[in-house]
Image 1: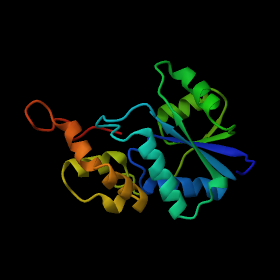
Image 2: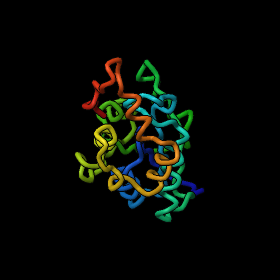
Image 3: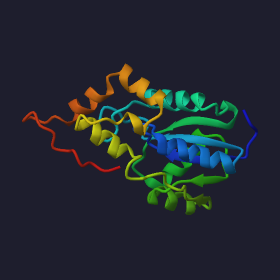
Length: 185
């Protein structure tokens, strides 16, 4: 493992897609190493968070290994949500390797880290409307192809767990129809 300094990249990775790959590469072009904080790690089997922490971790490991990105340059950690937002930054720090800079485009994440004196940098988006977890889950619900939006490792994990069927089952209401095809984030 590299000695750092480490930067932090927070996301839910529901699922890990090509936009996330772009972000990791962008960060590693600048930094020695990146801590990938898998947020909402305790949530799964929900339409907004259909995949478990372990499934998301497997997607990330597989994708970055396939790209030849040395594991000495990145580290992944699960971070649960907390109801009191200011305490969340302290939890991230407690669960993570030491980091000195944060990369995020999420407004809440940016504010929380800026208020605790971290430098926060934006990540240039790669086709944001296309490469998003919301769009991928929408396509799964609509039975449309989503595989071009994610790395091969993500496809493999989703197919192994029958993730498309899981997403559809999570959306079915009492009438047998989906009432949440436009959920956000």
